[in-house]
Image 1 (spheres, one colour):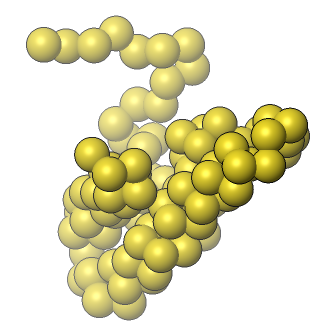
Image 2: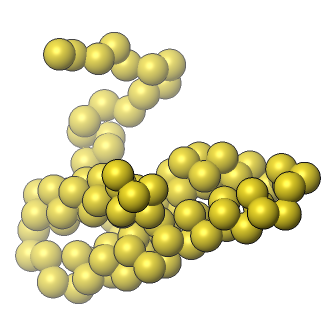
Length: 100
């Protein structure tokens, strides 16, 4: 099943270029964490929900995402290896934080 690209969706090549650059990859996982947690720099006006959102964001970025991405850039030997591992880590970090 193929999906249609959304708006200004990146090409596979553009995404690969991001996933092989450490700073761009870290920036991307932080942005994804905020989107997944629906944290757009404003409060939900519910302290319990804000706490949960902050926890999910932290789990995606710090506990799993950022530390694992740092390991990829420390040990992966080729750009294709970095792109593959980072794309896999994105999926796993998000699913793990959401418990799916």
